[in-house]
Length: 78
Image (cartoon, rainbow, N blue to C red):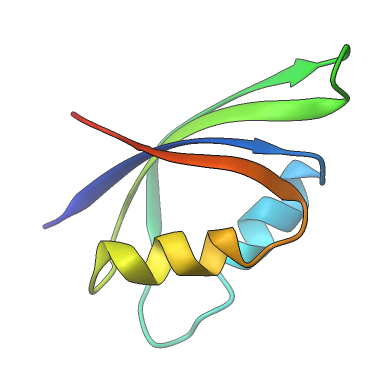
């Protein structure tokens, strides 16, 4: 099974992030690790997560990159 570790910054709610990740019925994503910290100075959440259950990494990255609330998106090495 493929895993993708991501670091991202979002100005939206964490519920919106979850909605985006689970909005496609073609595949079932599993969030294996999730860590979020609220940065009050920048009014955003800094999130690190590990996701599995996708066909290609590009599917996830393009889906998240298209969201207006996501300000930074960085794939991480394991």
